[in-house]
Amino acid sequence: MAAAAGAPVPGPVISGWAVSSPYGLGRHEFAEGLRHGQRAIAPVDKASWPVPYESAALVPGFDVRAVLGRKGTRSMDRVTGIAAATVGMLLDEYGAGLAAAPESTGLVLGTSGSVQSIMDFTRDALTGDKPYLVDPARFPNTVMNCPTGQSAIRHSLKGPNVTVSGGAATALLALQYATRLLRGGHGTALLAGAVEEFSVQRARIERVAEHGGADPQPLGEGGALFLLEDEDGARESGRPVLARVLGSRFRAFQETGRAGTVLARCVMDVLAGAGARPDDVELLVPGTPPGLLGKQEEHALDGLTGNRLPLRSLIGDAGAASAAFQLAAALAEAAACPTLVDRLALVTAVDRDGTVGALLLRLS
Image 1: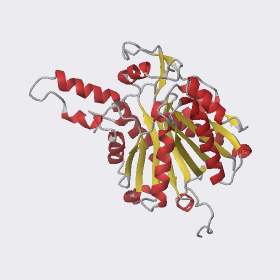
Image 2 (image 1 turned 120 degrees about the horizontal axis):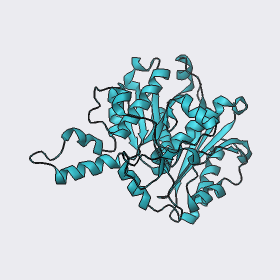
Image 3 (image 1 turned 180 degrees about the horizontal axis):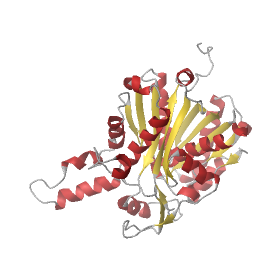
Image 4 (image 1 turned 135 degrees about the vertical axis):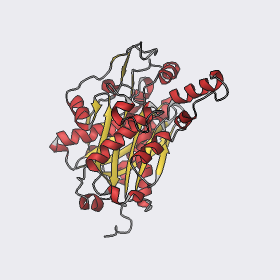
């Protein structure tokens, strides 16, 4: 039935999710790690990872060929392997019926790409032996949309294929993009989320980056993906409605001291769009960046009294995958706590490059 004139357009539902995290591959490992408050940050093996950090939160034992097999993985880099593995887990559990209409099933993946692959390829171009200098099979890894394209090819997703990059807010931007594609009739089901890799070059860059006056936090990696579709499609395919996407808002700030005010405006806008009040929010999942930005985020959420889920202190700075882990944490908490059924959850993100975002969900 069509929505009444002036009424909010119903958003998509989340009917499945998968996660590759510092707790391991799978939703169960992630949910159990959070439930027990387990800190997944561990000392770095400097022989394998010569990085300027003493600790990090890596996907334990992750090896592309061991997880995905030898076929098609000879030149696959770490971030692409994490993306392909996570897509595979989601489709294995929730993909009933999607294979029958591959042109209507797409992928919107948030990623920063692979700094390691870009810098390695550039180095080889300058130091490699003539006449070829570089391994051409590794060139696709230098392009930001490589994880998205390779994941779609590997899992036969022939619908829209989109790569999004937006720092800590990347996953929220990906979900918004996927929502717009669904509303525009460009697909009936979309996988949306974000991934990030740990690498030597990423660690070196993060070490010297500006972190709002605070020391850089241990780096994390992994990713989470969510299946978005309309409610009728989910129920017809026998998939559960885990949450309803009520809306998202994004804004930019120029001065760090303005981040909290700008984020507060996002929060008020997304609540107003859903006809909700601040005290309706039962669960808050902030990004909690270090230093002044973290204080600004806290300031923006001062008027909300919902329970807060700390995450970054457990799994480190997950870069582009940060908000994806936050959303996964909200779904894991809802599955473990029946009192959250039909309650609102708010996921927020603040990126040091000047972007803030807020995503509002109704948990099921």
